[in-house]
Length: 216
Length: 216
DNA sequence: CGCTTGAGTTAGAAGCTATAACTAAAATGA
DNA sequence: TCATTTTAGTTATAGCTTCTAACTCAAGCG
Image 1 (cartoon, each protein chain N blue to C red):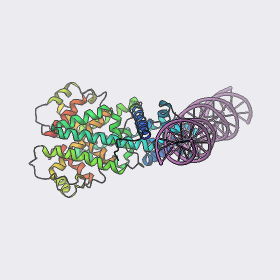
Image 2 (tube, chains in turn blue, red, brown, green; image 1 turned 180 degrees about the vertical axis):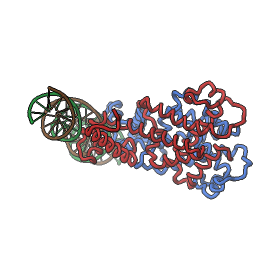
Image 3 (cartoon, chains in turn orange, cyan, green, red; image 1 turned 180 degrees about the horizontal axis):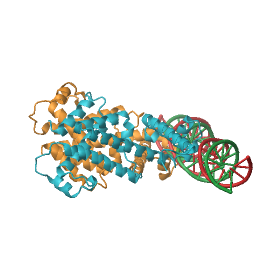
Image 4 (cartoon, rainbow over the protein chains, first blue to last red; image 1 turned 120 degrees about the horizontal axis):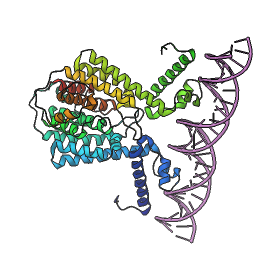
């Protein structure tokens, strides 16, 4: 059976689901995930509150799905940037563009965790896709000639997160550095911690990328 | 009038306020800021919901005060670490200890921002204290001999965030790098993004610190 | 054409924040 | 010492939320 050709009921259903998620994204963008209201979405769609429970198990289920979509979108962005061959600077640019496009979407992935909340299992698979794309880019860069330090020797035995990627410890280390540093500058910018400080966040970001690619 | 010697009523009042905040911290630690419930706090203290409005303007006011306290605590930690003379590694260790002590407290400062929310003005003053301590530590390190790059020349004219600190652009640049990189590794660790990846987060953290102090 | 499936409804329970009106006790001043 | 004022805490209530239950009605399908 082809998943694309669906019955009219299924077509309608998936269309309403998409509409609900679209409104949810709007709300999240303007009020954050904590401000997402099922009632408000239902009212916007011209139907009454409980109707949404035909489409989603509840508020948490909806948010979980949005988190999944955000992960998916980020993984696709990473994959595309890695395949574009524009190297680490290209990947970094793509990441920042993706983040600035919808900061709250970024925070849905990398923001404050809710203590009780457990992400669905498939998000860890997508997270591995993201790391795989990152490793591809890092593996294509100039190899570092420095002798391995404590972290690299540790990573030689603890690289399960890299799956079966054939990257040497130096590349693993580099990928982690890229990830954490880009997240560092970017998340602070997105959270508004640079506003009022006077400098241009983009310059700081590109400087961090240059520091990663070998400059300075 | 001494602020310490207060009337019995004021003593009682401030004690109840402290009790409320203590319960609020417990709730935040176990359920996150979004899970904080005034009703639950009141019930724990053996009084009924609306009684808390004698002590705080409302839920938002209480959270704002907790944010302020978190900022204050972090600034004190930074000041103490800077004055201890243990350099950048000491500062980094203090930061990580402080963060692991109560991850949600860290996220109250550096976590996902709520789009509408505006932090009270005095937090920006405390944020400047934090940067001042960081600048003190960075200024005491070995000066870099590299010629200034684009970011440093930019910072030479855009350093209002440094107040009247007499740090040269190279130190300003360094302070920003320290801040963003430590936040990068630390926030990902606290959010649980390293769990299941296999490596030891502490090694990654210390490696990042070593990369900052000149090793690597 | 009749039956089944399912989308959407209203009603209502349980929770939340927050306000209003009231009670009772403690501090204050003549 | 007694009357007045201040204030901590109460209950009642409005208005919001998520979510469940029971019901209606129309569309799809054999």
